[in-house]
Image 1 (cartoon, one colour):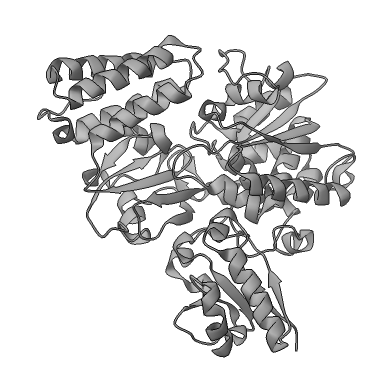
Image 2 (image 1 turned 90 degrees about the vertical axis):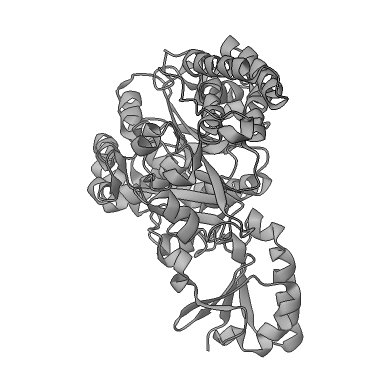
Length: 520
């Protein structure tokens, strides 16, 4: 009889919920009983309300139990957990949990399934098939496969990935770079972290494919300082890949070279903007660059640079393995493929839900997320991070699609959805947006630097009832100026939460008429 395998997640969320204590207690209990079993520290599947989610491998599949506390271990073992037997915490086969079963997992197909640092595990679940295909078809065909897939930047802008790659591939230079933007600063987002902690070789493979495709020999992952575990896992995975000949010279016998390393940011939100990120990566203060020139022409160290969001790069292996047409078949309109949507805030079932574009906002919040954790009615959701618009319940029929959201003066951003119940004060949320921008501004352009501070002051006057109508008009005009005049999206997008709060929740500002978004 083979040794039983028990999976206890080792990602940041599970650890915060006590997964280390569960694993330690489990190991001690097994030793005390003289029972042989192997504890595998996998990544999280993204069902955060069930963490720590313990899984046991059985002939019928992996049976799950959760959320498990250390004190639950003796009773679980007594009940026959190692054979997948029933217990009040038993959730059945993990793949049959509705939250997971309803998903279309392409980018996150291996998350929570494999040992993150086992190259054998990664390959056994389809890993490095994409890179092998890229080597087989060559650089130009690889670029075209990504272009044909319809993959767009998953960091928020939604720019076609294939166009960036085409531009860098066509630009002559003695050195080119691949830069992965893993500076996941939006509120309610954690998809980048999940990949780095649960499936790091996926990112490594995607960046290697990008490097070989455009002629770049060096890659950097710019990770945020709040993710020390992600950095540690990625560093180990890069070393493993390099030792196996999957990084360095003559990758997979292609005759081409590519290597990569991690870089840690210092926590500035503006460094999620690609040019400020490049400045930081060069060791300078993170200040936004004027464009043109584009990073694809003059990027890192003034060399042609592909700078993609982590999810974009982690999606490349499945596109190469299964083909651009396969990926393009998912989604709607110009939004092709799948999106890892992150449900957070006041929500019953918070976590990551990967699905094809087109699902409605209401289905995500109410059916998938289970409504609010407080049990009170939903008042609004903020999509797209701290600079995203607030959408009221009457807009919950909006499909999750770049263009559909834009039509509502909203943003998909990095796919984060933060839920608020009816106790939230939207005037305070609008003020927070201006305060956040003032705090995080790099200071280079006047509309962002000064506008955010004046916006906060004006909102204070409105909330105090001081010349409310006149100050509402000033705030609207200020938002219009910031939206059109800011150098980057930090100042340019701050008006979205402010104006959406004013438009949809005027009662929170003491104003009865609804104000439309400033005309462009």
